[in-house]
Structures are given as C-alpha cells and as structure tokens.
Length: 253
Image 1 (tube, rainbow, N blue to C red):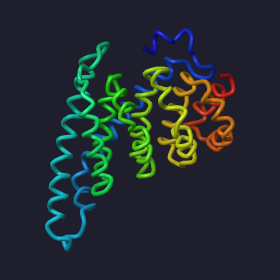
Image 2: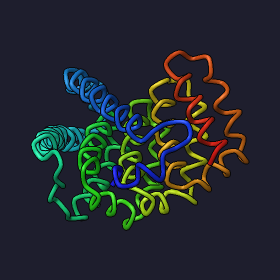
Image 3: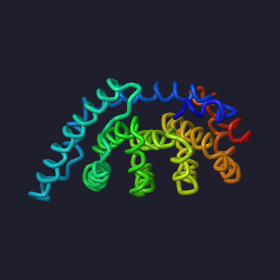
Image 4: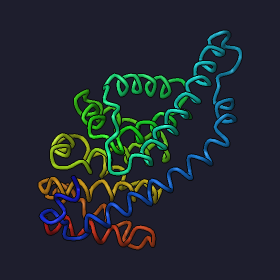
C-alpha cells in the first residue's frame, strides 16, 4: 500500500522509504528493549503486588497476572516469527474478538497490574504491524481513544501506544481518516511536551504519517501552535533531523 502511493504522496520533508527505514529501526529497538524487560518482569510483577493484608484477592490477582503474562508473551513471540516468515504476505488472523479480548486484559492490567501493560501492547503491536484487518478492528471497535488514554501511564507504554498507532496510520488514507479529525492530534501535541526522546521521536513519526495521508491535519497542527511545540526539540541531537523534516512537511502540505 505504501509503494503504490509513493509517487504521488511523497511528503516534502521526509520520503516514504525513509519513514519505512525508521520504522524498521524502531521495531528492532523495541524488540531489544522488550527482551531486557522480560528479564526483570517477574521481579516487577512481585514488587507491584498489593500487600498480603488484603487477603485472598491478592493471590487471585497475582495468579491471573502471572498466567496472562506468559500467554501474551508466547503469542507475541509467535506472531513476530510468523511475520518474519510471511514477508510480502498478509497475516491471516482476522477475528476482531481477539482485539476486544486484548483490550479487556489491558483495562484489567491498568487497574491491577500496570507493569504488564507493555506485554499486552507488544502483542497489539504484532497484531497490527502486518494486518490491515486488525487495524480495521481497532477502528471499528472505537478503541483509538481508549488507547490514547494509556499514554500518561509511563514512557514505555507511551512508545508502544504510539507504535501501534503508527501501524494503523501507515496503512493509508482510509485509515488516517479515522484518526483525524479526533483526539489524536491533541494527544500528540501533549506527547511532544515529554522530555523522553523515544516518546517524542515516535510522536514525530506518527505526525509524519498523518500529514502524509491527511494534509488537512498539518494545517490544524500549525493552528494549534505545533511549530512552537517542535521548537523545544530542535537542538536535541537524536531528534533535530526528524523535527526539521516534520516542520518542512507541515509548512508545505
């Protein structure tokens, strides 16, 4: 879908191939970070557990979390391997009930075990990365706003949420029409205020995709002081090239 549109929709500040290269690098970095997180997740799970004074419900909550964690991890790993083995082909999983069930788990984790949210979001990332049908499920079930509500939880969660949204946006104009108008642009202006370079960098990637397929969003970004939000990151070595590219894209849409 990207390649078909490459000739007519190349953004002024950043080419489609460059965006795809960055996305691949981002995925590799996320996989590395996830492996490191897996080494400490069991300890974090114990540390985040409520005090034993709360009685039997503690064991139930912890037991459910300990069961859910390896199940989600196995599914994520299997989907990652399947995606690598199906390069050039589309994944065949198409049941939106999988997405609905995953969001029930995410809501449970948010309330009881926030440290497990990255596991669920990593699975959602693998589901949406190579599957337009799962991206469609996110949109048809109106799950973009609940996803955005997870942004304040932590920097790790924010990066994964933004990565999932990039998966949706890169599928093309029809998908971006469901992302804007809506709360996404306001949320991205908020994440641009973060000090974490990973969060800001992924926000820039998502804005590039959004402006590529929804030029009107660039005008709204400018009207909401978007350039001022970008200026604070102009001198950050890891971000300045992407900031400049996004400024050019926004000004020339």
